[in-house]
Image (cartoon, rainbow, N blue to C red):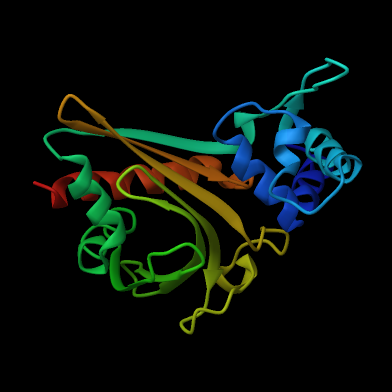
Length: 228
């Protein structure tokens, strides 16, 4: 991805309204009118936000004059899906929402999670600490936007300090243009006694996509082991 493309993506994600629009489009294609419903904004104002997201390549819009449906472009997402055999959905949900369970698996291989604080409600926050094999702590925080037991979790995702204050990626050695806030959506499907868990990480820089995907998959391996 070119530097101009990255700049356009980060600029598009800098606005909280545009991030909320992306969150709504995760559930499927919809119209400008439907997208405008939760916001106290005019349709032209929403359309301006959609144009910014479209120019950044984050959404695609239909050409029907009266409807112009918008859909999320998954090319700028990192999506990870896993099947957790013999793990009922309620147990997988608990692994994500109970701090005592989450610390057993959070983080890639050879990482530990010494701290997990969870206020599980819409508007509530979480604070996690992930510790590397070398002993460096990486803190993350976010706010829950949707909590639908045991089906769906949506939350923001930001780097943090030990007090839960959001910090830029440069705090942990990443570029100055790393987004301050992204969004994570986890869905849990009960399929014949197994749990299909799908995670979407919205706003992740493409340069970090593969590494982050590897980290999620290693975390999920630990999750599966913790549920045995």
